[in-house]
Length: 135
Image 1: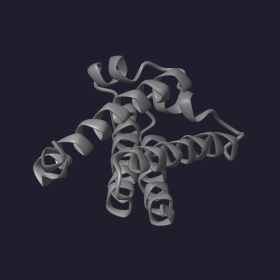
Image 2: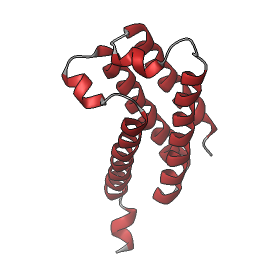
Image 3: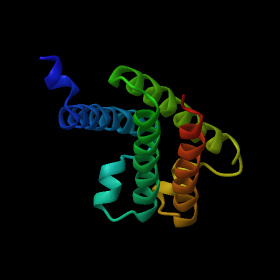
Image 4: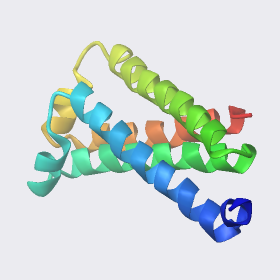
């Protein structure tokens, strides 16, 4: 049985499955902290929400890329990926805090593409900073 778990294809499928499951859970958490409904807005064609959500998806996946690359076990990868997600979520709140003259969520919900784009770039950029720190 140990040969089964040490097979590179099985290990890749296991890491992939864990990363996808975490991605879904983390997107649900993002859905809970935003004032708009991501998938309803995307269905309506709101490009700002699509960019912001796409940035979050890329950011989470990128953090897991680094986490898988630098950790031997799936549990370590998941732990570091979760920690990275918490930092990414913190970055979202900091972005909201640093713009006191308007609300990020409201602007994205109104399809302000400039804000949606900046939100996407912040998620992507922070994922590289977070990922490079994962040990």
